Amino acid sequence: MPGPEDGARGGGSGRPRIPPPRPAAEDNGPLPAATPPAPEPVAPEPDSTAPDEADDTDNPDVALRGPRTSEAGRPPTAAATAAAGTAPTPAPAPAPSYDHKVLKSLLGAWALAACSPEETAALEAHLTDCAPCADEAVRLRDAVGLLQKEENLDLDPLLRSRVLQRCLGRRPARIPVPEWVAPYDAETARLDALLRDMGESEWRAPVRLRWFEGNRGVEREATVAGVLGHLMTVDGMVAAALGLPDPLGDLTSSGASSPTSRTEAYWRAQMPEPAGSIREPWRDQDRTLIRTVSFAGRGAAELEVPYGDFSLPLRDSFLDRAFECWVHAGDIAEAVDYPYEPPASGHLNLMIDLAVRMLPAALAGRRRTGLAGPARRLVAAGAPGRTLHLEVEGSAGGDWYIALDSPAAVPSPDEAVAHVALDGLEFCQLAAGHVPPEEAAAGQEGDREAIRDVLSAAASLSRL
Image (cartoon, rainbow, N blue to C red; front, top):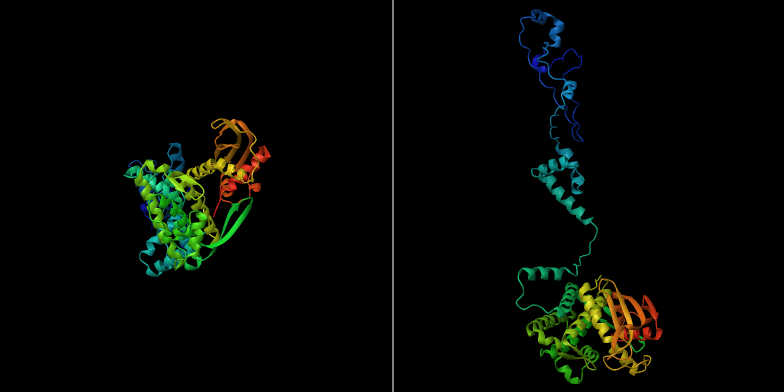
């Protein structure tokens, strides 16, 4: 017979206070949330004024229902609780339990991170005790890793600069790298990263080299190792100007004084075997150049570097070498079917600025050989003359003004007779000889002859 602890009817309302029976547990999923237990009734105090209640225990109907409670001892109903302004606090649901079979079936969903938090906690606790399930979980997690989308393994081009900047911010370098050397440092490091994992067959892959001569484009085929040897021999001209060893050695006695003749002499000589062995001397030479100019101080920036029929200050020479390193790195990446990003915007802007500053002299040289139209108006040196406004678009772009009739004239916006707009990367491809002049300009207006002459002069800056 139930006693007071099993529950009682409340106040004659007819609503049972005993909770209904719970459903049976399922083997293929979590159990349903348990119904909160009803509050235990308070046993009534004996009341001498109601003697008839003592005799109710002899009544079978009353005994089956359980003892009655007084009004004071009756548990509060939900309606009474709501009237009082407070909601009943439900008891927390017990944590679901799972057997081995259910947990094993959840391993696939766990590997895909598709389990609920409760299932994940129960399964990971199970994996600490069940070795077969733990082994299966490792295999499934590895398999899921193979299904992930393939990502580009190239590092961010700016990562090196950010790391160095942060390191130098914490501890400034005793001998900092000059600002005009930073593009060369970055581009040689990026090319070295591209070459690091190449096999022998890739070192011998054919590379198509392109440049511009006169009014036509020129092509030549080399190998990846041959292109790197070309970069090393031309960098050797900068090394020789700084008093460092020339990588050509005795080959310089054959009259190799220009970038093209030096490269031809290197290619005619016996190539290193295996082909990948060229990487180490090229990398050592680059690091020696950077270290030397860093110790040389500011005075070295204006040191002249001869390139055969022209020369450049050392600061511009390092920008020129950075530009050619990037261009030929792109040629190599194209040959081995590998993506290659452009330089950082600040470095690319410095390279564009160098090319623009070289345009008046290049235009005058083409005019002397009859490849450009004659000067329209000669002015005294230092006086403003006819000008072309070059607008380079993009994050590395800007506005430049180019003297048309004489390198000694001063360009002036008030004297502009033509306006050309190009994308920054498109202008660099033009200066590298990879884009024909007639296809380069995105927008142009004004003197058509001046525009054609300037674009052709930009393409003539390219060389082997």
